[in-house]
Image (cartoon, rainbow over all chains, first blue to last red; front, side):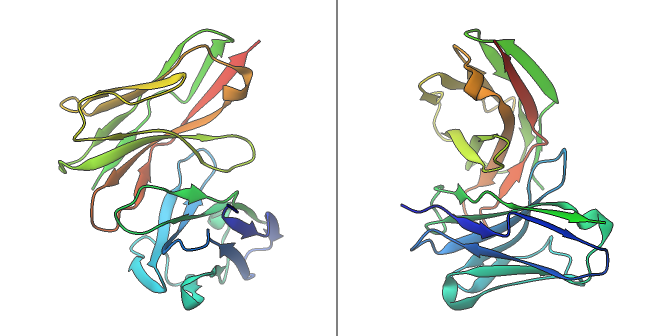
Length: 114
Length: 115
């Protein structure tokens, strides 16, 4: 089966600019996650979707970050305006649904804010 | 809130030898899952092994095994017959059973296997 697709793979922007990341989960996976991985740290959950509804966005900086999952399939994560501390790898993952542990991660987008 | 601690930022091992990576966690939950993930330079997180907290038997996957001590909240990973391809970052992760079921990760251990 195809894996979790993410694009772009790399992105360099200046601070205060905006940026968007895209994720296509494994077909049929109801749950989608966005994680932020700052260099030298483990991934931290930003937002979790169950189909197209938000389950957990408690650690999403809502003043600058937004995310949506249209029709319960693809998802986009946006940052506007970006700050230097947003430099990180943004990982998308999907799983069949609540109660399963079959997480599959994408290869991530490395964002550098200069 | 759950926390996961990996106290070894970096480790190295000679090819074909055995290495153990440490992980401790803190939770008040009784039912949960524990995982070890491998992250090579490609950045994709790859599941190495998982353990259900209600199972007393330690999980094993080929050369990878865990030592799960529930009372001590310890979950170490043993890699036997280390191979060059095992070189990567290794993350210990915790997940509750129920609720949002998000993964909580440690900071990782960088493992280098030397020829």
